[in-house]
Amino acid sequence: MNLELHAISESMSIITHNSGTAGNESLINLERIVTPNGARWVPFLSGNAIRNRAVREPGMRWLIELYELDGKLTKSQLAFLLNGGSLTESGGTENLGLIHRLRRTWPLIRLLGGSLPSQLLHGSLNVWRGTLVCEENRPHLRDVPEARLLSAESFLTNYQYTRTDSISQGTYRPIDVLAEADEVDAMPRLSGFDDKKDKSDRHPIQMIFNGQAVQRGSLWEHGFVIRNASQLRLGALLWSLCLWQRSGGTIGGAAARGHGRLRMYLIIESEEERERCHEAVREYVAYAASVKDEAVASLMEAFA
Amino acid sequence: MTPLKVTAILASPIANKPPMLDGIIAREAYFRNQMHDLIITQRWQDIPPWTGEGIPILCRTCGGIVVPCASSPIYCDSFAYMERMAKRYPTESADLLCPKEQTKLETTAGPFKSSWRPVKSIPANEVVWFVVGNRRGLLKLLKRVDAIGPNRKCGYGRVKEWRIDRISDDWSWVCDGVLMRPLPRTDETMRLKGARPGYGAVQPPYWHPARVMEIVEPCF
Image 1 (cartoon, each protein chain N blue to C red):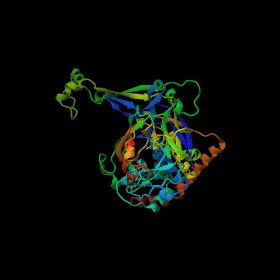
Image 2 (image 1 turned 45 degrees about the vertical axis):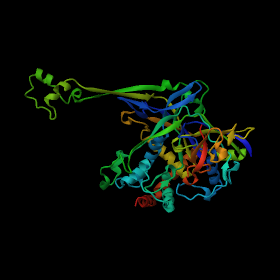
Image 3 (image 1 turned 30 degrees about the vertical axis):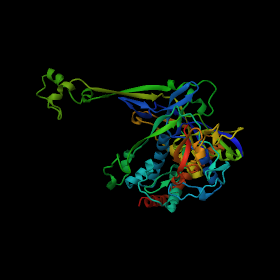
Image 4 (image 1 turned 180 degrees about the vertical axis):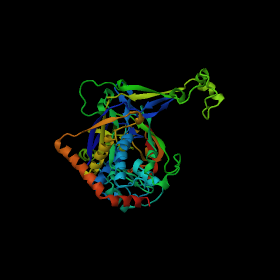
C-alpha cells in the first residue's frame, strides 16, 4: 500500500535555489506553468534537491555516526551513502542475497535506493517538487482558500552583496596614504605586491554580486509518497526530516549566508495518525541501533 | 470491453515524454497479480512472447503480432523547456573518509563524475489516451499509479487524478484514417494517414531491446 505524506513549509529567510548564473547574477530555478492566460514562470524547489538535502543527507549522516563509520569509509561507500553512488561495472548478474541484506539492515537505502558498483537498488520514495503557494499554482495545490492568492511574481525579490578586497578591509595600507605620512621607506612592502600593480590597487576594488530570490514568508507545498510502505520506512523518512529540521532545514544555495531556511509542518489529520508517526520513528531508531553489526557488514560486503 | 477515453490530470511537468498506457497497465497488473515471469526490470533479462493476458485492455492482431488497443499519449508539447538535474561527489564530507582514501578525486570523468544533466520538461496539464478496455479494471489499476514517465522519484509526472469516460467510437489504433499508435509495418498500415516508418516496440515493455521491430508510428 502506498502512503502519502503532505507537508507545508514556510521560508524563514530568502530562498536561493538556483538554476544558473547570468554574469554576476544568480538565477533561481523556475518552472513553466500553463495557465488560462498563457505560460508563466514560477519558482519551485526541485524534488532532487529535497530528496537529497532533506532526506538522504541527514538520515545517512546520522547512520554513519551511529555505526561509527566516521573516518572509515572509502570513496565509493561515501558516494553511495550520500549521493546515491553510480553504476560503474557491467554485469549480467544480480546478487539477490546482498540486495536483501542491504535493504533489510538499511531501511533508508530501501527507501531511497542507490547504485552499487555492479547493480542498482530500487528505492520506494517519490518526493514531490516544492510547489510555491501562489495563484498560478492553484490547480496543483491541495486545500487552497477560495480567496485570490498572490501571484508568483510578487514573491520574487533580489539580494546583493559586495565582496571587498584587502585594501578596504584594512589589511593593506595603500601607498598614497603612507606617502603622506612620510613612512614609505620605513614600511616593509607586502610580498607579492610590485610597482606595476600600484596603479590598479590604489583604489579599493569591490565586486558586487547579486541574484534572484524568493521572499521570506513564502509557503511551499510538499509531498512524500512511500510505495509499499512499512513502519520502518515511514520511520526512516520522518526521522530524516526531523534531523534536517534540527540542523537548520536549509535548501538551495548560500546557506552559509543564512539563505534557504525552511520550517516544515507535516499535515497529520488525526491523533491516531500522529501516534503512528511517533511510533514509527521510535521503532526505526531502535531498529537501526539493533542491526548495527549486520548493517556495517552488508555495506562492507557490497563494496568488497 | 468498451471504447474509453483515459485522462491523467497532472500536477507537475512530465520528464521527456509520457508513456504508453498499456505499458503502465501491464506493469501494474503484473505486480498486483504477482505474475513474476512477466515482470521485466532489466534490459538483459529474457523476455517471453507477449500475449496480452492479465490486462483489462483489448488486444488484437496486426501483421501477426498481438497489439493492445491503446493509443499513443496525446498531450500539448508546445511549452516544453529544459530543466537540469545536478549530481556531484559530496566533497564537503571528505572528513568521513578513511585517511588513506583522502586522495585526489577526479570529478570530470570516471565513477565520481559530476553531472548537470538536462531533462526535457513538458508542463502539460493533462494527457489523454483512447483505449478499448474494461473501465472498472482500468480504474482499479490506475488508482495505484501516482506518477507517470521518467524521474518520478523527483516529482516529475505527478498525477492528481485519473478520469475514464466512455466514448462511442474506437480511436485506439486509427481515428478518421489517421494512425494513433505504433503498429507493425505492413502494406496496410503504411497507407494510414500520418504513418511514419521507424523502428521501435508495439508491445510492453516498450524499452526492452528484444521488442524492437519495423513499425509505423504516428508523426504527431
